[in-house]
Length: 194
Image (tube, rainbow, N blue to C red; front, top):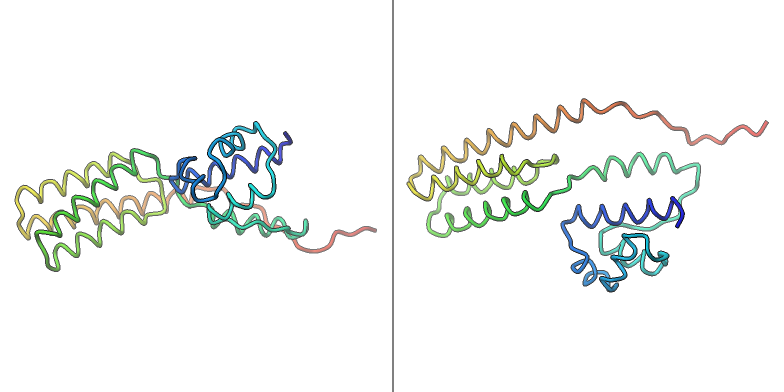
């Protein structure tokens, strides 16, 4: 299998994992057998256009032929869009537990304080950096403390603690963005044949 095909299959696998899909779930979405997806990801079978198209569409990707001269511009754009975080299983589990706890809290308590807490949880899940499961465990413990006291003060304190954690995550993401090395510029001009 060529390097380009291996690179393509690696990108498909990364896109599947970034969406948090198993091969079986992707199989159901794409209409491609799970065993075939496994073979594609392991470079054990030639990738057919029909399979590629089905899998790409299931992963919210589009296939297109791009003029070679425009390739650097397209790659630059896709790099900036494709920098969404990959959420690992531990992080996903913690996020699910936190959402369940907040939903349970909202079912027996209401008001602006609980809505504020729900908003803070949504903000944490939108951070565009890899969320550390340990930070999410702190968030979960904070919410557990609300369940034991059920006071408005505890809800407000939890929302403020979560806001503080969100700010830490946002600042970490911003510092990582600054630390990246600058990318070279590109040209779309025709090369001189002369």
